[in-house]
Image (tube, rainbow, N blue to C red; front, side, top):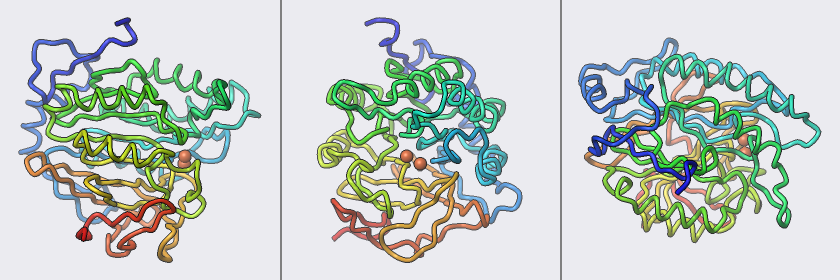
Length: 358
Ligand SMILES: [Fe+2]
Ligand SMILES: [Fe+2]
């Protein structure tokens, strides 16, 4: 096993003390500090926000689809506002569902793409680093699409530059396996095991799926109280314009079975640009709304598109999660009852997660 395939074991949360940790700065997330902070921290709401969420054992701030137009080095006001507010939620982790920059256009020059990653760093990653909040993320089609034409990776330049950026900007994660970073990797924090796969296009390679199953069946994954998987494309398309093949994962039945077999609690995705807390079979699905440009309409109901951020509070003993989702334009809470009870996606019907399965 070469250096790049070396597995990094983390200390926090899983009781695997005595082994090395990949990087050291997420000190605020060590088990003991979290234990202290959990009992002493009273949940606050950022200024201008409604009532604070009820704090769980672990708090994850979920954002997605941040980019503006092609080539942009700036972000819409909701993104900058969210990044400014995030420290006030006192989360343990920020998770991003991808589409952090707006590449996937061959007419952009290398320096345009590099400038976009610098813009991302300036607006998003650097403020989180300064606040010592780890940033887990998955690569989106606009960051570095894995689409192939035969043997050719169509956006190889985007993939090289995304990789260059992430290899030189440590996101504060306690990696377990960073062999495929930044495209696919695992990390752990506070008894939660996270697996990120490369769903930047609709086909995840078979060898990566074998890696995912092996990782999710590992001792570290099994010892964790909860397993979460993050990828950009969803299993099932739920918004207008994202409900055609290519915009959701091609082999969803196989992936759903894999995630259920490995006792994954939730699959978190971006790309659809609309918030929908769902479930299908034994798996929960968190469709993260867009925070940046282009929120979309669900294929059911008549809700106007809106931009969101979701605070996920995890109860480790019950293996359950509570979502507090904000409309980031109007700074209001999203009422789950305004969302459709189910969505008939082109491939499967998925239920809103609070609706009992029959
Ligand atoms: Fe997007
Ligand atoms: Fe996308």
